[in-house]
Length: 443
Image (cartoon, rainbow, N blue to C red; front, side, top):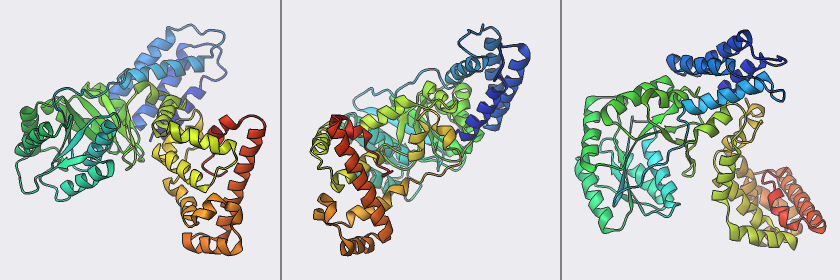
């Protein structure tokens, strides 16, 4: 979502290339471009001015070391200021109480229900017993949606479809949680298309009755500056604990993420990208600032890989690779692991320099589907021994997967080349590292 902002900031820093020192004139020119870039990204004008004034003041007070160019120094100062603008440090949610109650608020369409499911999945992976509570008593499909999400992540959902009193439903759910050893209760609430008194009264009553450990405000980042205004209206009434930014993979300008912390003085706690239940990340201001400035976010990428990483499975695969027994079943399993890590374009954007390279490039998360279809159309014998796949088998696989014979041939060739590479690495003594070289894209 920060592609345009990153591009414009990079252009702003270009004005300092070749400059031997920081002067009031070249800093003023660069800061002016930075301010324009922030405002174009829908950052609040007052916030943009405050930040760029701070950048200018700090830049003029710095001596440039011989090993650091003025451009590099200004990037560092800008990185620090963007980090501070978005909160400085990361803040996790509080899990306090028996059970700990987390109240979810926001407008209709902001992604509250989907976020509730993602949060349940996030906490479940930490070993917590979670209960989801359906308190959206107005939207007909809300309860069904929450039940579907609960089933996807393996978390129980408490609902009373005939009850139209959200406070009574929530209180009954808390009692149910206590009896059934649920340690965390996530309460999904109703929203409206715009801020109105009836909705505010209901969510205020819920907060008063439940006294939650955390009240999280979910906001659609694609609504831009309106997201900040809505957050302020909710915070004035609810005094929530933190913000959740959803739809960060959308084509938005990013101003909400940059402005919201300064305007409402509440931390951004989570960011959400995509519809997958795993597509939820704790918010780190310093990492986001680095990504905006095109420096990537390797730490988050490693953390995502670790979450999808199965140590026992890795040992098993490493052993098969050393014996040159890696087959299509193993390859298919590795594809599933990569998919669990999240949105592919978002993942590539975490690699330093890739954000700029990927500008304007559309990466479809469904790009693995043709490969999966071909492998799933193979018999178990063919997956384990690809060398037996002859012309007639290729035709059958082609028809079964809905792909062309040429695509089947391409996959078989790429897989054969990969196995040859693994065999060569084994001979060179690199068998234990072979797994890390596995390219799931088949290229």
